[in-house]
Image 1 (cartoon, rainbow, N blue to C red):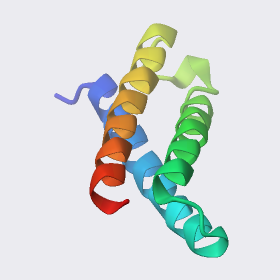
Image 2: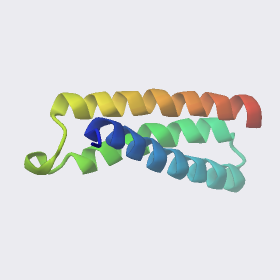
Image 3: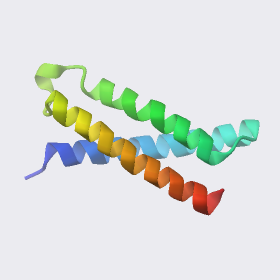
Image 4: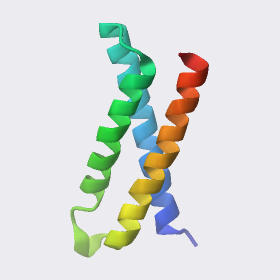
Length: 91
């Protein structure tokens, strides 16, 4: 049986990570800014927007408000940890 909280965290981390990494690379190439700074800024915008979008229809949402907030918080912690690792090893 699937846990909706774990699958929501996995979805937020997956989509936010790849979109933030792509945004970081594209903005870094276009403007010469650092990958880590752009990645962190994108993480702090993409993740919450995705969580809000997924929680718009409250009556159809599998998660309660508390679970949705916990999923977003844990996702942000994971994504910021990934960002610090990327910054340490890639620049």
